[in-house]
Image 1: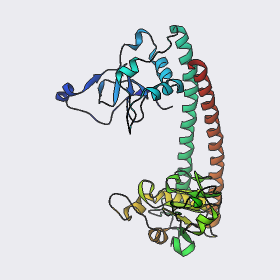
Image 2 (image 1 turned 120 degrees about the horizontal axis):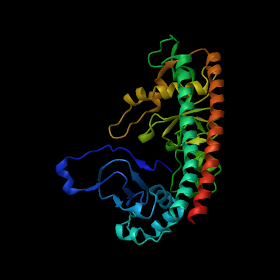
Image 3 (image 1 turned 45 degrees about the vertical axis):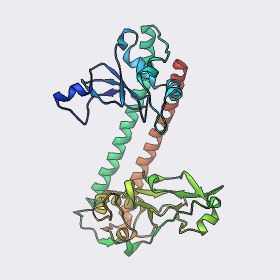
Length: 342
């Protein structure tokens, strides 16, 4: 569950455009009515909405706005929206459908009790997410403290191309016209969209041995560093934490005795913009394996890299504990939402 409030907008209109839109005001309740339909927000500003939103006014007569927010955010209400939403490709709501929904109206003191409880859980979750951001910032700061900016190399480390000290490989995609390449597969198969975090421990899809043999997919050992090469995730980096294989949009850099994978992860993440600058393609960036192999980066002493990696692993342990707390709190929130609204 994200923020319940809208406090700013990216776009603005001129005053003469007011006649062609709908004005809404601080305290109003708005509800998305297409695509990710049924998502409620409480306005903290005056503004205008386009036809992808519904405005619900006068809620204060029967509801504390925050209570109505939680009521509409509950899985039970969303399931009702799903049943009512109409549309072919895109489900959408309209004002008549929303008006037809029957909801409970507890006494105000009960609404206040519910809001206080759910707000408290969300506040603790927000504090945990802020702690995760702080730990991520700490890890990045440690990298620069140890090694400096890899772009300018202020500490004067030796510069080497990746191909001079490590082997690389791109993956492959078994033909989708052969179901036997995928059905009952046991080999983890990484796609570029999954290169979105530091530690990659699992994949959504699996392929079979025969699928691997009939494609350019290759086995990649744990602690290899994955770099997404194409499209929206181009330049994203992750560390493969268990043996798997890759699709053709990922380049893997194999572990070696010159660089630590955690150091390489932070270094390449810092060089992402440089990689994108030399990428091919106008609409979608394409970082070829050749570009990655010839990329030059500082190579500090391995002992220093491993000292840095040990500190990062401590931070990752802290993050894991915080993430488990968030998961526990989310389970509690879901349970309490179910208790109050089911």
